[in-house]
Length: 69
Image (cartoon, rainbow, N blue to C red; front, side, top):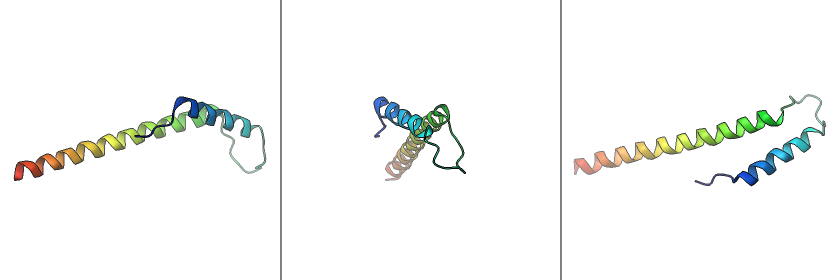
């Protein structure tokens, strides 16, 4: 799995903080840095859970095929 490194995550969060100061969009919903960080962390956790679930299901199917032969 290619997960972003902590330095990349810090860089992204810092950039979001800088962009947040530039209010170019009048209709945009403002998001603070904490909200973006939580969204990114939850996305990483969900991606890992999906990958692990897929791995275990694929192994289970493979074992059933091997037992049937």
